[in-house]
Structures are given as structure tokens and as C-alpha cells.
Length: 278
Image (tube, rainbow, N blue to C red):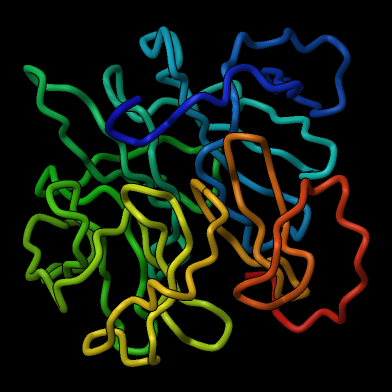
């Protein structure tokens, strides 16, 4: 709760079931799951498929298998695969992304003698229902991001919220260098459609943007932050950001950084599709 700033939220009206051989089966048993969805990740090959993870603010031991997916964000119907949900018997998923080979990657946190340890896992194959494989890590990086322009893997440290760069490739993420350009601490960073780095504030969960596209030398524009409190962000095809929040899934009204977010079901704007699936 404290580690991931999961404040309030409570139980939302979210339909969550354990997936059978058919996702539309009426025989699925409801899963006792405390919402809201925390992490979100779109699929590469299906524009309607999204993956996610939720965090429980109580009885966390009952929610280690917190990997979920949906075939419709608007429906708010989330499913759990029948198998290979949990990272391990101790880890809870706190971040989802892809590696440079489009393999789903997760960061999981566990408590070790009162100390939070963050470990990195990858899916064994491109099938999201395949097993999770643990990788070597430094136990510190709480979220990951691919800097495509420079071909580097970067991430935010759980110690100081600063950005670090991985020295490793493929199956090892043990060595990191940084902090790079010490600035306001973030819980997660990514890149917007213009190539600027954006981040989610570690303390306030606001959305920040670098002043220039050269993030290694640019500071966060704190005066023009989007003051919507979010847990995670992804782009929709129309260039509007989709956010996970304590009040459920929301979407920007317009494809502008400062645009207001509204509940996804209340989104009524029409924009041209300006982005590919991701």
C-alpha cells in the first residue's frame, strides 16, 4: 500500500472472472478482487486486448496472482488466465511493459524482512498465458522503459525515484548506471507521441513532461504538469492517453498533454487515428 502509493480506491464495480477455454463462458466463477486496475499494457497483435495488474489495499497475500486481461476496456470485464498468473509465491506485479523483442516483461515486488525487493520477470514465449521466468536483477528498479531512440533500457529506482540505465542485455538486468540527470523523483517514465519523456510523479502521481526532447539534459516541467492522479498510462490510437486511476480507467478528451481525463465510458469525442496499435 505504502510502497506503490495505492491510496483509497476501495472496491469498484468491476467484473472479474477466471477465464475458461472460452472467454464468453457463463460458467466462470467470480474472483474476489479489490480494484482498481493499477498497471495496463496493450497487446501488439489485437487492438482490443489489454493486459493489466491490480493491487489490493488489504489482504495482499490473497492477491499475488494479480495478472489480468480484457478484450474490451469499455466493458470493464477483466479475466484471469487459468494458469501462470503469479510471478512467484511471493511477488506482486507492479509494472508491465515489453522488451525490445516484444516479450512481455513484469516487475514484481516482495517483502524480505521488511525490505521491498523488486525483481524482473519475462514471459517464456510471446503467448501471454505462458510461464513467467525470473531474471537477474538488482532488486531496486520499480519500473522499466525502452528508450528506442538510443536503444537503451531505462528504469526508475525504488530508492530515489531517479532514472537509471541498464548495462545488460537479454536475460540479465543486474547492473545499472545512474542516476542520469538528477531531478524530481518519478515512479515510472515513458515517451509521448512527440518523443518527449513523460513521467508519473513518485509522490503525487501527477503527469510530468520534460522541457525538451533531450531528456538526459532536460528538467521536468513542474509548472505545467497535468494534475490528474494516475497509476499508469498508455496511448490510444487517436493520440489520447488512457490512464489507470483510483476511480477506474479514464481517457483524455483531446490528444494534448494537458487535456482533461474523463471516465472511459463517458468519452464522447471523435478524433482521427494518428498512432499505430502501440
